[in-house]
Length: 274
Image 1 (cartoon, rainbow, N blue to C red):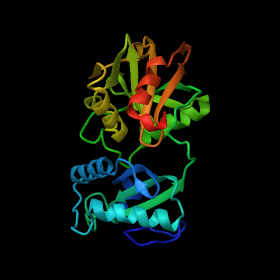
Image 2: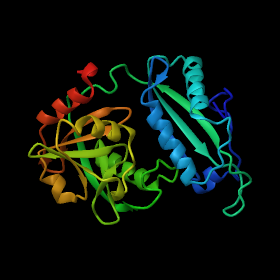
Image 3: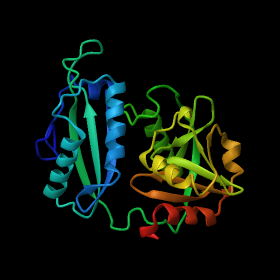
Image 4: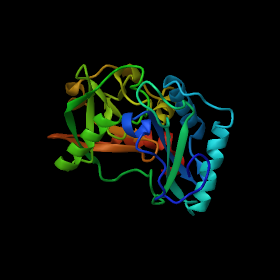
């Protein structure tokens, strides 16, 4: 679906002068849907609209969270993705050079893919991670957004595939923990839960926020600045994102981790999945 109109996935939507293509001038959201409805939709749309403001888009009245949610429902129905599905919303500026955008009104693309019904269930086999250090994530007003200039994560994902890791840990320009290519990172030491603060450059994950909100009253949770040694000294590590919920990490290099408290946390946050 492009700008509210259903069309074939192979249809061309951007010219060679498109700023999204040329400069990565845009944002995206990845939303898990179930039975034709977005999960945590309000949080996803709030993050997207905040990003549109940061990137100085002119948002017309007809482009609203309600409109976008209705477009998502229409697309899921058209594609017969009414079970568990992944939806990606990409928003980008149209044609123009660096200083002369033809318009600041957002164009948007909505795509959907079916997912296995058990997506988001507890992973019995822990993930294998590694550190990616060649490209560092900056800490600035863009860092918490899911913007289309995603090269640090692209490069980290290429390294993860090369090394046969399930995911790669990305560091910020201060050589501290940031996040991974597709998830926020949490670790547990002596039953205290730690996660990099947003000021450390990580994506402001919707699931990250959901987990923090639900755990703050039950566990001691610290958002702060952490380095590689902190992670390697941890008892347990888990990742979070909107598609897979929580997944525990079995190893990082030679370091092995347990999952006793991580399982309890998963059950507390997602009781219907347990």
